[in-house]
Image 1 (cartoon, rainbow, N blue to C red):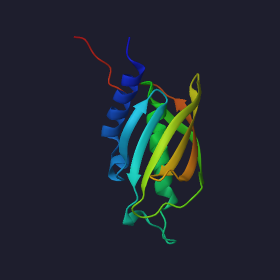
Image 2 (cartoon, rainbow, N blue to C red):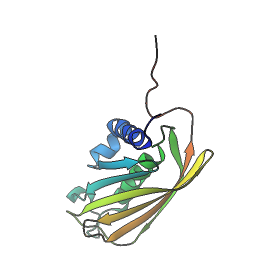
Image 3 (cartoon, rainbow, N blue to C red):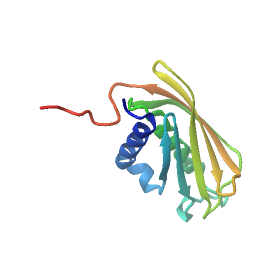
Image 4 (cartoon, rainbow, N blue to C red):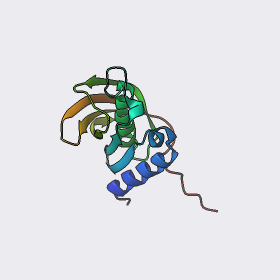
Length: 146
């Protein structure tokens, strides 16, 4: 029997290697477990919008990536069918942000996940909720015997 924590980490690592968008934004995969994931991102100068704070699209992308790693942690290919975000406080250039995703429910083909984005001082920056849908296939390549 496969260890669920190791399976989640293997799925996250495989997805991270294929996820050019996440990697090019400088998002780092810190940890993954069954139904959970933790990522980080440093706010760069090119992420700052006209009011001098981090553009909300980058915050959404960070949370969405954490959500994706969490809901794909069981080796079932899973996609988002709905997401929303509440911006609570601004993030500024140089801030190190941490997105922690947690499964709230998973039943049949759907699941619900919450993501908290906090800065390195523990200040809440954003709250994200995503709903997932299990599609056909797996995250990890299937072993084939010849």
